Length: 317
Image (cartoon, rainbow, N blue to C red; front, side):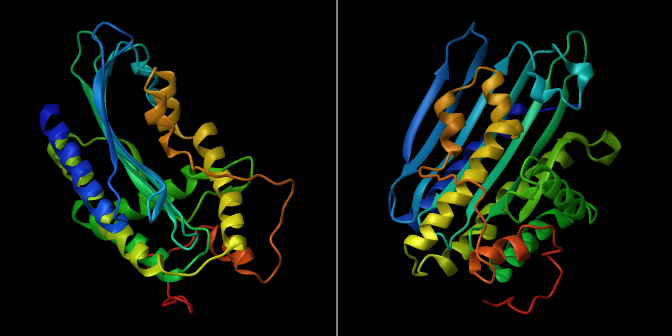
C-alpha cells in the first residue's frame, strides 16, 4: 500500500485549525495553544499541538489536539485486533477533541480521526484509519439526536451505504460501560482498523472516508449548540450534569483505546487527559425520580435507537 503521511498531516492540522476557528467564534474566547516536541532517541518521538479552552463563555473545558508520533513498539491497545503486529515500530497521527459545555442542555461531544502505520521489519507498512464522533447529552432531545446521526450518515454515504449502519452499531457497542450496563451517550459512529484493498481504492479511498468524517464534525455539533446554549438552567441541572460526567470519566479511564494507547506508549499526559471534565460527582446507588427529565435520559436515550430514520413524537423540541 502506498502512503503519503505528509498529506495526512496537512489535512489533520488544517482540520484542527478549522474547528478551533469555529469554536472560538461560538464561545468568544480564544483557545490556548501549546506546541510540543519529543526529543529524538526516546521511547516516543514526534510533535503535536494542544489547543485548550477553560472557563469560556460556552465551554467549561474543551480541547482539540493534534499529535504525530513515532515509537519503537506498538503498545498492547493498538495490537488488540492485530496480534501479528506486536513488537513492530509504528507511526501514528490524529486529531482528537472533547468539549464540555457549561450549560447542561448542551451535550458533551467527542470526535477523533487518526491514522496508524505499523512498520514491521522487512515488510511493507500496514496502514489503517480509525475515529468517529459521539454525543453525550445530559438532557435528551430527539431533534438533536436525529440531526447528529443524520449528519454522520450523510458524511459516510458517498463511501458506501453499508458504512453508517456498521459504524453506528460499532459505536453503540464501543461506548458502552460494561460495569454499569449502560451506554455513555446516544452514540454516533466509530470505526477502527479501517483499510481498503488496492482494488477498492486503497489508501486514497480510505483517507477520503476519514476526511468526510472529520469535515462532518462542525455541521453535526454546532447547530445543536446554537439551539440549546440559551436554555436556562439551575443548580439541579448542573448537579445532574456533574453526576453523569462521572460516567464519562469511568469510560475514558477504563475502556477508551485512545487514552490507553497514549498512556501505554508514553504519550504526553496533559494532552491525553484534557478530555476529563472539570467538575464531576459520584453518588452511591443513586436513581432519578420517575417521570423527571433526568429519568427520561435513561428510559428514552441511553439505549440503542435508529436515530437517523425513526420519527419521534417530540422530535422538534
